[in-house]
Image (cartoon, helix red, strand yellow):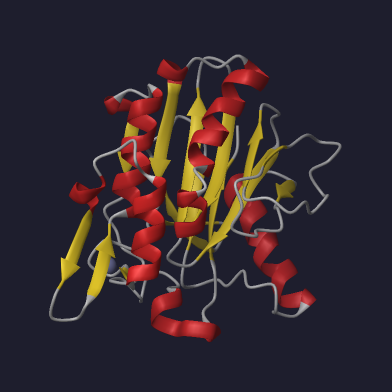
Amino acid sequence: MQRVNKQSVNFYEFKELKVPHAFLGREYNFLSSLSRKELSLQYENVKKVMGVDKVALVNQIHSNQVKIVTKENYLESNASDGMLTNEKGIALATKVADCQAILLYDEKRQVIGNIHSGWKGTVDRILQTAITLMQDTYACEVKDIKVYFCPSICQDCFEVKEDVYLLFKETFLDIDLDQFVFYSKEKDRYFIDTVGINKELVLQEGILKENIIVSELCTKCNPTLFHSYRVDKENSGRNLAIICL
Ligand SMILES: [Zn+2]
């Protein structure tokens, strides 16, 4: 990840996939409570960064719903947490502050995806849903799909109480969950590596190890670079993860 300036727009450029993909961090705010004017200015910057005139967003609700985006439906704000497309000229964007944004790319079939996966989405296996949908909709082969985990909250910062831990425990009977959970007796809290869990799930799905790339940057540990819900609480802004063909 590299901080770049293009046409007076500062953003973090990724080089991991062979298509334009980026992250707009602390210098911007994509919170929908901003004024219409402020938000539209931010989205003008997004378009400049990506060199497109269309930005697709969904109404994120911590679900496992994934939308197939087309030029006809990209403006419809469906309640879902992931998007896939094989159409050029549409940037897929997800808003995150500590949650995972996961970018998908199949070079052979020219298909991209952008998935929002907080802990609820992780428990609901949205990433696996998206990968299955890539295969069913676009005939992607799992060995061709690359998975990029954008900056998100790290295990040391993702502290939860027993109720959340038990949800993970009930859900993930198919993986060795213990390797992704640390319990602090002193704090009586659990620390969960949600990126590690998603990584394990996609490996089981058949995604190749060399096709999984993880940003090592934590949004909470780097509050000058990124918005973090755990740092700013209710006042937190949102980072934007974007990708286009
Ligand atoms: Zn951290």
